[in-house]
Amino acid sequence: MTTAQLGIIISILVYLAMMLMVGFVSSRNTNDVKDFYLGGRKLGPFVTAMSAEASDMSSYLLMGVPGLAYFSGIADAGWTAVGLIVGTYLNWLFTAKRLRNYTEKLDAITIPDYFKKRFRDNSNIILCIGALFILIFFIPYTASGFSACGKLFSSLFGVNYQLAMIVSAVIIVGYTTTGGFLAASKTDFIQSIVMTFALFFVLGYGIVNAGGLGSVIENANALPGYLNLSATYNNATNAADPYGIFNKITMFCWGLGYFGMPHILLRFMAVRKAGELTLSRRIASIWVVFSLGIAVFLGVVGRAMTQTGALESLIDPNNLTSSSKAETLIVVLADQISKNGFFLALIAGLVIAGILASTMSTADSQLIAASSSVSENIVQETLGIKLSETGAMIAARATLIAVAVFGIVIAWNPNSSVFGIVSFAWAGFGAVFGPVMILSLYWKRTNKYGAIAGMICGGAMVFIWKYLVRPMGGVWNLYELAPAFLVAIIAIVVVSLLTKEPEKEICDEFEHVSKMS
Image 1 (cartoon, helix red, strand yellow):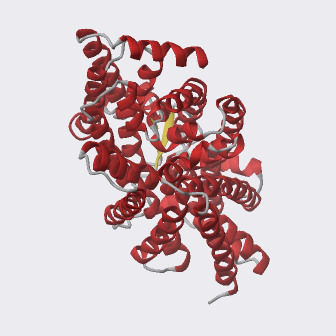
Image 2: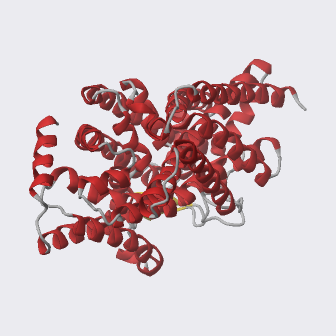
Image 3: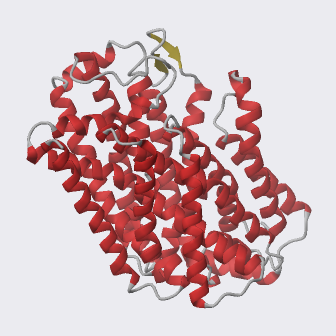
């Protein structure tokens, strides 16, 4: 083992031990399923903000976005970043406080549970549909995190990809099953700090080794279309490809997904006081602007390093249309840093810990949301199997482990794209839960029939558009979230208007929450 590898391993082990310790400490405050899934609604504004953003910014922040920018320039990554920034702010502004007040009044601890109680769906149809879609889309989302971990250790130490992925999954499952939501939120807060450090340090290192900021811009400009928001660089032809309005809409529409992300919405529900969400919104909005901006520019810096010979090429010569190899950019940079002495090897280890943080902070939150949908919403409420408090906790943890196993199976192929997997799952959640979430909070006329229609149509359209419509190309090559989101809204409005109005009790409750917010 080299000195560089030893330094990296020491930093990673210290970091992982700290995460497991947080899980153990949090377990003392996890006494029942409400604590396990929502932390007893005790989160402060800083933890709420940073844990929400850390759980959002999965491995695509440090691997997917820089890799995309490295591969084809700033258009794809840049428009995605703009959409995510706008979506983050609007979600905090319009959803957070009202959802917090509504779920507290209804005593709802999961998103499907909120929809059930909001629409008085005693048949549990909404509950079951919501829980099933959470499972369908969270398993591949979790798989993207495991894939990122496997790529990380495989690239860095030359270890087997699948083995590295399994070990990472065991650690994530370990602290999450121990401490539940509180452990996930506290570790996410710590992980957001580590992620921030990793981005700033690697960016600074890259700029210096590329010859300075001027050299970075000069080398990037030498690639046709690379620094153009209306074009992309084509690695196969060494020319610029047009990046039209439909491409921009496609990437910008990533922001729509925020309104339907269960692992982010749960943070709004868990904050200590609704009034503290204003501060949380400001913290989260500032962080997401800096983190995404740096992630995009890191890809540009990495490509400039390749142009100057300071970094090996991360374009797969056998597949010039794949950005999968480019997603290892930050890993390769950390490896370079580690070879400059033991102290820098320790710093490189913290950078690697930042990559782990970006992955773990999302995977733990997804596992919590998925396990709650099964043990609470399907097993107990839909199937009517009553469990004791101990039995419910066992079911929650068993479900969490099962979801992790399925995630490992999906991510088994080392050539799977982190950005690609996240993209599909993000569209699914955004289309299934986003429209019904917005209308349930702001349109009194929404009823359970409209909610059911919207969730089914939104989820179905994600699959239809991705696999049947989008392959047609041309104007149809639009990110599936946009058309699915629109179809879901139309379905909710039309079906709600064609069916009977909500009961007076539901309308009065809506008015009460509206005044509170």
